[in-house]
Image 1: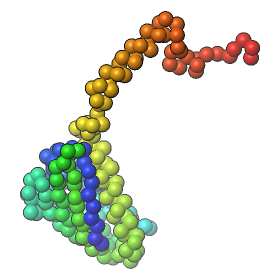
Image 2 (image 1 turned 30 degrees about the horizontal axis):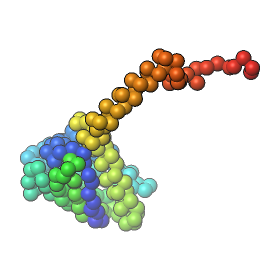
Image 3 (image 1 turned 135 degrees about the vertical axis):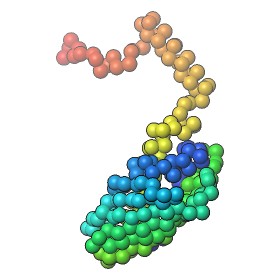
Image 4 (image 1 turned 90 degrees about the horizontal axis):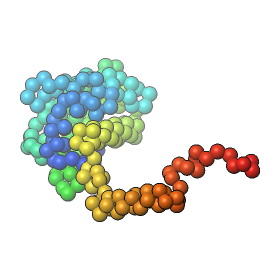
Length: 196
């Protein structure tokens, strides 16, 4: 199985690098991950529950980082055993490139599976892998927003727009005090009219 892609992240290159090298963050963001613990320099023990079509299994494995170039890139090798369900092993390259909106994460994955999972067919395996990758990035994006806030352009409207809104709010309040216009929600609170 080969997979590649890139994602725009709304955090700086350094913030993304720190998160991608933090076992707790990875455990939180990887779907089905029960354990992601450092066992040595650039080495981690991992336990994950994986479901591919009708086959579900708990995989125990290890991840090893190499060619580490902070905060721009690294390679990782992974292997896991899932008992009768089979095994998985492979390699991935991850890159982070800064840009105006934060940084772009690029990745490539080459993986092999064996055992029952391999018998399910390539389309089912590729679909499950893509789904896991999408799920990881949704969780990762949400965690980055929780830690660092929304990207700058989404945080606040431009100062002029905020000032205009403030002025319109003052004007509407003045008009209501003078008896013109309705207060927000007034229609909802109104009871039945005498004719009904």
